[in-house]
Image (tube, rainbow over all chains, first blue to last red; front, top):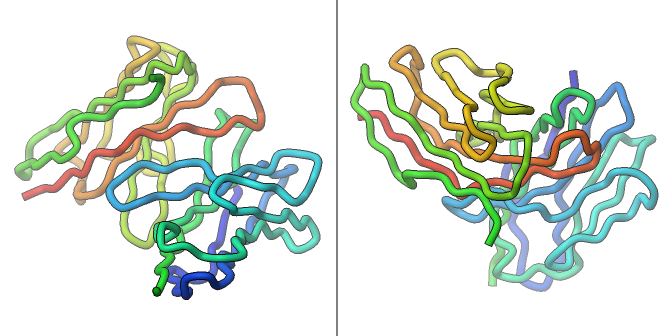
Length: 114
Length: 114
C-alpha cells in the first residue's frame, strides 16, 4: 500500500520568506506525485505534478517541487511567500495502476504573517 | 465552462436520516471519486467509479452508498448507518486510462448532523 507523510500540520512564515512544505511517500512502483492547494471551504486545486522526466517541477503561483527518489521525498517550495498563499496544502501519490486513486497526506496549513 | 458542481454547499441532517449529495461533471471524464475530509486527516476515499454502472469501495465505504447511472453524475448517499457523518465531502473526476492524469475537484459539501 502507498502512503504519504507531510511533516508539520501547521507552518507559519513571514511575507517574503521562503515557504518549504515537506512530503515523503512510500510506493512499490514508480510514483506519480501531486501537490494540491485548498482555500477555506473550497475544493482542491492542482499546484503541480511529477510523472516522469525532469525531477524539478514548476507549478502555478510560483511554487515548485523536487522529486528525490533516494529520499522518497517531494518537497514543495516557494522563494517568497505572499499573503494569498495562506491555505492548506496536500501532497498525494497516485495509484495509477488501480483506478487512478490518490492517497493523500494529512495536509499542512500555511499561515503567512505580514 | 467545464467543471464539477456539488450541491448543496451546506447540508444539515438529523440523526437517523439518509441524505444524498449531488456531484455532476461536464468534463467528459470516465472516472469519478468521493472523498471525505476531516481536520488533520487529509482526504480519505469513500467510493470511486471508472465507468458507468460500475463502482468500487474505497477505504471508508461503510455507511455510504453510490450509483453511477450516467457518465456525468455520481451521487453519494450518507445512510443512517454512518456513525459519524459530519464532515466535508469532496467529489472529483479524472480521465481514465491515463497514468499521469490529475483529478479535478468540486467545491465540496459540508454535512452537519444535528
